Length: 89
Image (cartoon, rainbow, N blue to C red):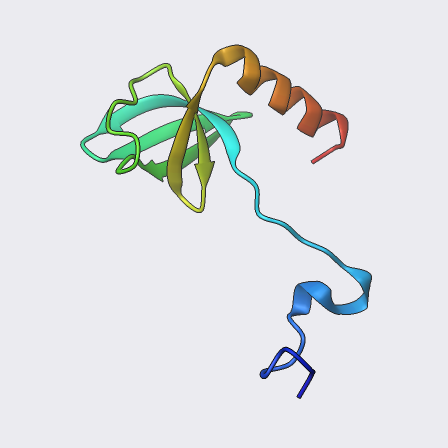
């Protein structure tokens, strides 16, 4: 047993590794009730829209863990994508 971690140290903390969760900007291309389909770098992204019922086709939304959590303007979305590309993510 590791102090503070009754089931052992989380794997992301081992061997100097670090991980984090991020929300990615995705352009919404289809809305079907509370489900949406987006596009990110040529890939299709499925998401839930429960938290953003006002989201419409063409909007950029931040997607985290399969949920659209916030709308962002296109300029902010493009800047975020540019920065992610710069660090080769």
